Length: 119
Image (cartoon, rainbow, N blue to C red; front, top):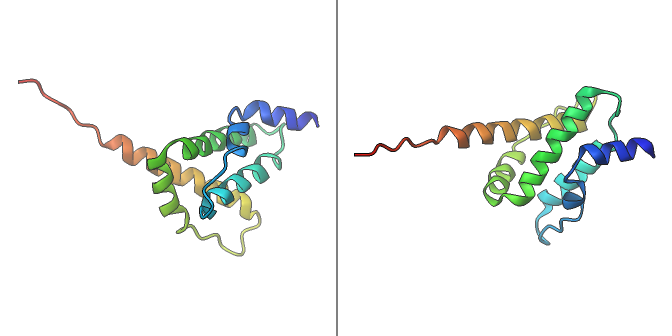
C-alpha cells in the first residue's frame, strides 16, 4: 500500500485523469486512461527511471485531457502505432510510443514561431 501512495504522490494529475469521463463513442481516450492506470501501478517505485516515466506519462495524459488540439493530433497518431509481437513488455512499448508521439507534437508545435517585425 505504501508504494501506491508513492505513485500517487508522483502523479499529481491522477484523480483528474481517472475521473475523466470520455464521450460515449471515444474508445481511444478510455484505452489511454486504462493504459495509464495499468502502467503506473505496475512500476517499481525504487527505480528512478520508472518514476521519471510515470511523471512524464502523467503530464502527457493530463495534457491529452485538457488540450483539444493535442487530443486530435494524438488520436490520429496513436492508431498508427504497431507493437511487434516478439516484444517482451508490450505495455512499456506502448508507453514509449505515447511519449514519442507527445515529443513529436511538441517539436512540431514549437517550430511554428513567427517573428514579427515592427515597421
